[in-house]
Length: 236
Ligand SMILES: [Mn+2]
Image 1 (cartoon, rainbow, N blue to C red):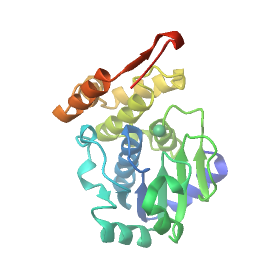
Image 2 (image 1 turned 135 degrees about the vertical axis):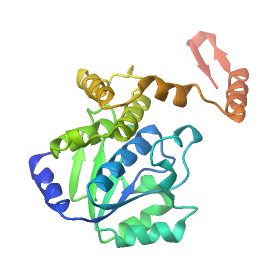
Image 3 (image 1 turned 90 degrees about the vertical axis):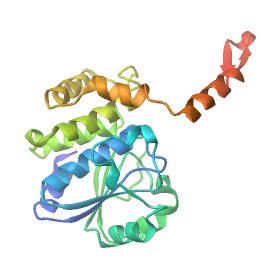
């Protein structure tokens, strides 16, 4: 985050605030990991923070510390609306356009709060007055880590926060193999392990845990795979 926006955010967070934290629709590991890490951070610093997700998220992410308290806009609709309407600050994480929250976009567009965007997708729209957009970042989770450091609170990263941030970096980088994985990503992950992230356990919970229906779906998809030899291509 650049200095101007960082100072504005510091000023905003210098007294206790009501805060809504929003991931995109159909939230993935990075969206849930980053919102939860930020939620822990803000709650531990005296703010009243609530995560409102546009809809439900996968079972293999529900073990994450704090996941039980995430509001589902579809299921807890009136409570979710109250949180957004009463918020002083709305953080939007891991998306670049209000259309990414589906049916929640209307209530966000009419919200009176100060918007803060943290995101690594291309071509961010300009709804947020405080922006941290960096397309070179591996994940929004890595950005939350950097932001907490910029706020001078690197020593306040708890094992729960470290586990949440690790999860999002791991899932968004395809377990550290995609091109956006930088040496700095690895330095962040190393520090997260020093702060209590349990990498092996997280891999196990995300990649080695399947429901019967998920395995059946995979089986069905693979069985119906079409191979086009002449194009060196296969599709399912
Ligand atoms: Mn992401």
